[in-house]
Amino acid sequence: MSYVVSDQWIYKRPGTLLGLCFVIWKLTLLAVAWTSPYPGYDTSSSLLFPPGIHDSEKSESFHRILHSLAGKVIRWDAVYFAQIAHRGALYEQEWAFYGGYTKLLNFLTLIGFGPHAKVIHTAITGIIVSNISHALSVFLLYQMTLLLAAGSNLTRSPRVAFVSAFLHIISPAGIFLSAPYAESSFALMHFSGYYLYALSLQAHGDGRANVRDFLAVLSGLLLGLASTLRSNGLLSGLLFCFDLASCIVDYLQSGGLLRNLRRSIFIVVAGTLVGMCFLFPQYLAYREFCLEPEAQYRPSWCTNRIPSIYAWVQDHYWNVGFLRYWTVSNAPLFLLAAPMLFIMLSSARGTWSLEDTSGKLGHNQAKDSRTAMEHRWISSTGIALARRLAVPQLVLGVLALTTYHVQIVTRISSGYPLWYWWLASKIVGEEPLRFSKWSIPTKVAVRWMVLYAFIQGGLFAAFLPPA
Image 1 (spheres, rainbow, N blue to C red):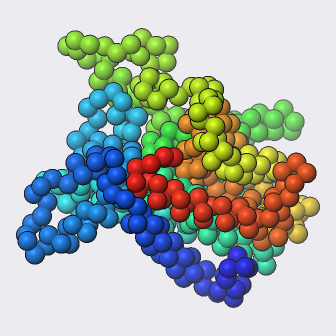
Image 2 (cartoon, rainbow, N blue to C red; image 1 turned 180 degrees about the vertical axis):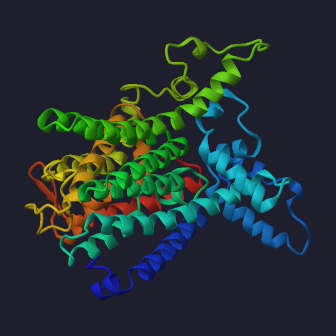
Image 3 (cartoon, rainbow, N blue to C red; image 1 turned 60 degrees about the vertical axis):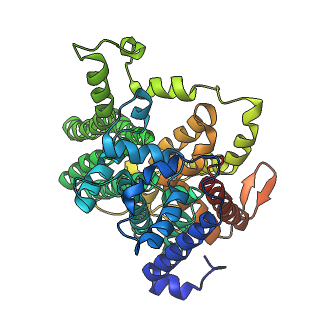
């Protein structure tokens, strides 16, 4: 960011600078949370600290400080995640939190603290995992941005890569990327799947069919694992629907039955992996609640046309459904989410204005296509990827607006790279954000992200909405 740091650091030491920004940001958010009143009117976090946690009088002051610090970030759903990871899901509503993330915390806690670990150890493991995952996803986003820019404008691309990664650091998800929530782990797994998918597209453009198909299947596996961390990861399966449609169009226009049939098989396998990973926790719940022969009680959702415990819990306990959140009392939450919704929907829409030449990169063409986008930072392969990534992001934005509890879009958006690239390219190109006839300087968007993260961090630590 030209108005924050000099270009010399961006070009010569981007990793060092990003690491420094990351540490400063995390410490600042922790300081904001530290100043919030604790425990407030909710004391559920204190239940994770049993009386016997103090090993000695000498260490009592240390544990008191640890108790206070951890209590600031183990709030809201983090309590659910820690308890479920520690002892499994006991009640129906807990299956909304049960999945890959809780299994991961349980496994890592067992390794780090042994079989006699307490719930607080699981929560602390979650904090460590979230911060490490966030740091790794920052650097992965930087590398993925450079991959998109390969062969294009070499002057602008490192700046766009740096700004994109920096925006992920100060994401409006804020303290959720430090707390025992799935957002950081999801972003890391999601970015990893996207990175392999980008490599697959690159291999397709170079005519390396074997590499392309292997990477496509591997990306499907990682995106599927991401869907076990956060259910919205399922939307990334749309990438493979897009590719399958492209194969059909290519066959209808230019033939090549065997070539397109081969690629279609691997695309279907990749997409199936995403769906299977998403459905596996649903199957476990169905087997436990609906197929147990000695069960005295069978929930009503077992007889639904689609017997999904996750859908039922969201509907029954949180009243999630189409336009159900559209009430006068929730109007302030829509206002809070409006900036992020605008950025997500505008970036997805704006991406479609880029010329996609991926269809011209055939099986027999190893040359990189020359496009009208040469003056920009993104390459033709990058454009092909960006257009595909616009699909799940657009669907997520529409669902957040119409169906979800809209305020969560500020945190679940953190795992989608497209809007980082779009905003970063605006910042580097010093282009304003446009809304109808109005122009909004990009600095305003960055300042909003920082301000929102600070306010949200203080409210979160005090167990106050929005969460």
